[in-house]
Structures are given as structure tokens and as C-alpha cells.
Length: 517
Ligand code: FAD
Picture 1 (cartoon, helix red, strand yellow):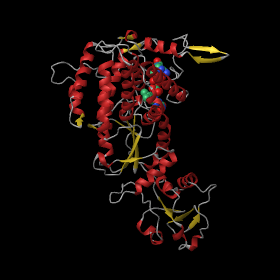
Picture 2 (cartoon, rainbow, N blue to C red):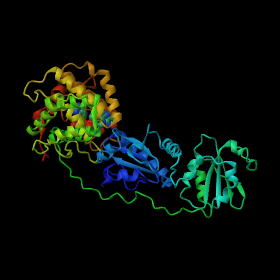
Picture 3 (tube, protein in one colour):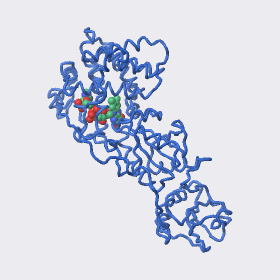
Picture 4 (cartoon, rainbow, N blue to C red):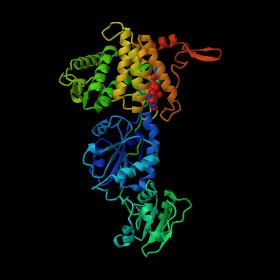
């Protein structure tokens, strides 16, 4: 699998999954697993990736009690659908010996690497019967256990970390030392410490080392924290890292796939991008839901309806869109299965080949790296195109009400299907504030242009920005010299020029068919 194309690489101490390997690794494993399901095109996933990598580095020595894994849903959508993942990024914790996909527990809130590390511990502690064999005990030690420790454990040292109930240091150090032989670590709570007066524990956290011979001493460190304890314990004579066969280090190919760079002209709109958006929305995003009902079914109907009515499609694609639309409009049940819809989408039973492209081919939307641009770029482009048409696909002129329908379809599509959950929330925030005021086609074109520019302004300089395609206020002066004007040293938009430009740029005549099969 070309794992390099996602946000993670073979250098990261985590397991890069694909659709087939995901259940093999995550289920029925003697280890616990913490998996991130992401989409490489999703800006929030890109922003989150450094945190997940930092976490993977931080807990790499906790393997094989717990592994971190990633699955790129943009590349392996089936894998994500199987695990019931519909938004990115989604974090799921799988206890050891999880039997089926539904046993993955969704971990809410992304947080910092430290917060996530603590969540790993909280989740490990939830194991009841099926404790991962490689995971040392994490519960506080009792006086009896400490007193008889060397009778039942064949190690040279026992490190005791005295700490408050809420502190994670003891459990973190316990896990940090799991790959090391000859030493065990236990946490001890203040109540127990009182019953061990010979230690003379006065502050929490503090740590003591007991040797098999019975001698004990305070562990003297500059700072009473995880790192200092860990470094001290790892430097003890006779404490060595054991040999572990860890998973996931050899599965990824480190060879970069050659990227075919497609020349594109910024003043044109490419049908390949638009049809790729159709493919991705209908075959990947909608396909995340095996059953479509309620708002999702309504959203799909609206989306396909505006496509059939306004998408300036090539003849075959136009027939397909009309067929899908009439099929959906005739649905009287209050739910459909995706596979029934897929049969229509793929022309099954009609004797014709599927006419929708089977993959994505990004042209203007191609990013300089695989994680940039692509699908979200094509989705914006598609809706700009839909709002800007002057004639419908039945040849009649577009009416003002049509434009309102198009924005409504975009709103419900984004809310119900767009995998970038944070993007969808932001967009819904803007839509609920002002989309209702739009009543003409000109207003619809302008609304979408203006909101898209607001998103561009917010995202400029973010990690998700493709350095080769910086987020600028659009249209730039090279594309439309008259769109921005200057008055008293201030730049302002000439909105009627902008509308005029949008209609021309996103109009049918400006769409080119290069790179279509
Ligand atoms: P895009 O912004 O995707 O634009 C595509 C093309 O449209 C540009 O190359 C340009 O030719 C043209 N264009 C640019 N601006 C305008 C305009 N104002 N009017 C008309 N045409 C224009 N990412 C996040 O990280 N956070 C978010 O909250 C977020 N929200 C999103 C909401 C929606 C509804 C969508 C569709 C995407 C969202 N994204 C978000 C993704 C982000 O907006 C970009 O789509 C993505 O980063 C790819 O950027 P891009 O450089 O290809 O240009």
C-alpha cells in the first residue's frame, strides 16, 4: 500500500492500515489498539497529524500492550465504512480481543498528546476479563502485594511511585518500563503509604526503589516526574530492553509513486475535476451510509436533483444524472439502501457501461502533494459551477428559485455527507446566519463567492495550505483586473464585475475536457 500518500510514513511508530488489514490488526488481537481514521485531504486531519505522531512517539515503548494505527479513508473508504466511520478524524479504541467492528469505542475530542496519552490509560483500565497479556498491572499496589512482591515476581527491582489518586505518573512509568527486563513498577496511593511507615513518604509524587535483597532507597531525581523516573530506572544495572517483535514496521512501501503532473490553466474549469467530484461524492462520501433515510435521504435527493437540473454534463453523464434523479424522486419508502442506489449509479441492468469515472483525476484541483487540494477543491468548484449556469439542462433559463435550491442542496449535502466534520460545522454556521436571505441567482453566486473567500482568509497560512497554491482572495487581479478597485488607497470589490466574472469563469463555455478518458 502506498502509505506515503497519506499523512503518515513508515518512520512513524504506528501501524498504517488499509481496508483489508484493518480488521486483521484491530480485531481479536492480544494488544489493545488506538486507531485514527482520517482523510488525507481534510485540513483538520492535517493539523491533527503532528499530535498523533507525537503521541505515537511518546507511547512507542508501550507496545505491544497498546498499538497506535492509522487508516486513510480517502484511499481506503471501504475500510472506514466497515468500521462505521463517517467523519474525519475519528479516534477509536479497541480493547484487546475485541470481537467485532462495533466493539471499537469512539474517543471524543482530539486534545493534546498528553490528554490522549491519559485517555489510553483510562481505556486500558477498562479491560476487565481480557487484560492485554503484555500490559503490566496498572491498579495501585496494596501493602500485602508489596510485602510479598519478590516471592511471586522474578525481578531484581521493584520501583514504587507514591502519588495521588489523580496522578498518571505511576501508570505512565509502569508502561514506559514494560519492555524492560528485571524491574517492575507499581503505583501506591497515599492511604497505603501510611501503612508503610518505614519509607517515610512525605511528598507525592515520590519514588522508591526496593531491591530483591530487601534494601530500599528513595529515587533521587532533579524533578519528580515521568521522564526523570523513567531515565533513572532505565539506567539501573541489569535493567535492559527485552527483545520484542513489534508489528507494523515493515509493512509500508517507502518508494514514492511517481506523480503525474497535469498542466492546468487557472483561468479554466476542468470537467475532470467536476466529474471527479461526482465520483467522490456519490461513490465515496454517500457510500459511507449503507442505509439512507431521514435527512440523509432528503439531502441525497436534493443533491442529485440539482445535478440533474443544472450540471453542464456531457451527454452520457447527463442521462445518468437524469436516471438517478427520477429513480430517487420515485422512491416512496422512507429509506433506501446504498447498494440499490449504487445499482442505478453504475447503470446495472441497463446493459450500458458505468459512465461515471471510476476514480478521481484532479487537474486544476491537483495538489503539489497528495494530501493537498483534491476533493474539497472540486466540491467548491462544483457548486460555483452549479450556481453560475444560465440555462438548465432541459434548455430553459435558470430562475431565481433555482439558485436558492442549489445553495440549499449544497448546505444539506455538506451537513450530511461532507467527511470533514469541522468544515461542515463552520459552513453550517455561515449558512444558518445568512443563506436564508438569498433570493436571486445573483445573490446566490455572490453569497457562495463571498463565503468561500472568508474560508480562504481563515485558512491562509494553515498547514493544510498547498504552498504552490496559496489561499488568496479570489479572483486575483491577473484573472480579473476589474474585480478589485482602489479608492483612497483602499482596495474594494466591484461586486457587479465579480458576478460577471464568476458567470463567465464557471459558465459552460469555460469548462474544458482535457484529461478525460
Ligand atoms: P479551494 O478553496 O478548495 O478552492 C478551489 C478553487 O476555487 C480555487 O483553486 C480557485 O480556483 C477557486 N476559488 C477560490 N476562492 C474562490 C471564491 N471565493 N469564489 C469562487 N471560486 C474560488 N478546510 C479547512 O481546513 N477548514 C474548514 O473549515 C474548511 N471548510 C470547508 C467548507 C467547505 C464547504 C468546503 C467545500 C471545503 C472546506 N475546507 C475547509 C477545505 C478548503 O476550503 C479547501 O477546499 C482546501 O483546503 C483545498 O484548497 P484549494 O487551494 O484547492 O482551494
